[in-house]
Length: 100
Image 1 (cartoon, rainbow, N blue to C red):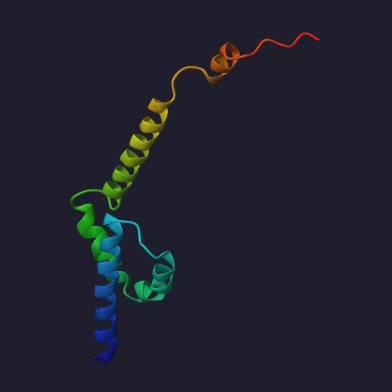
Image 2 (cartoon, helix red, strand yellow; image 1 turned 30 degrees about the vertical axis):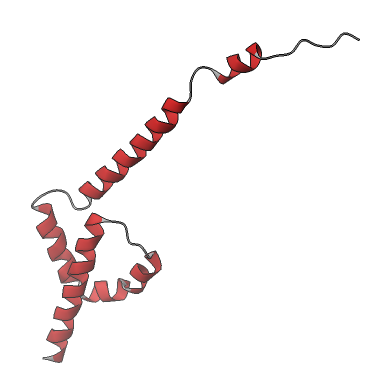
């Protein structure tokens, strides 16, 4: 009876942690590493979370898509602030050499 309770509790915790992992990256990766043993004991919960999530979309796809769109927007913002060729600006701003 105790073994069944242990597996069900570990499965519930593994399900919750796996499900949360689909929405956002973990704030503390070392804590996730510490829960690795618990997740391996409750692997049925992790499998159940993957199965339920795969009914709507690929597990983790929404998270990756939002990260990609954020990175792309940041790149476009950085890219739009640059104007022209930097080498041409330096050539136009050269001073005359001193005669000596």
